[in-house]
Length: 66
Image (cartoon, rainbow, N blue to C red):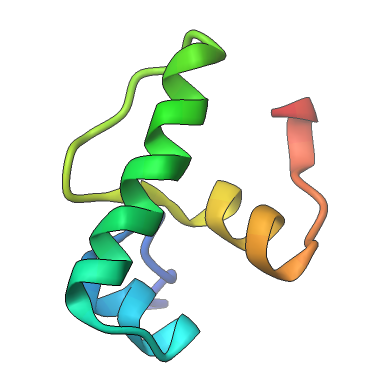
């Protein structure tokens, strides 16, 4: 079976991708989720959308206009 990458990142994922501490990872996630809530999107505390994270930190284009 083909394994897909996770759609939601945890603090540990953010830590590894940005080489930051766990507390900084949670701050990053909180900032991203706050912006998404302002756009009217639902968020899950302790998780962040991989698509939005990659778009913000790595400049990857989001598909579907989100």
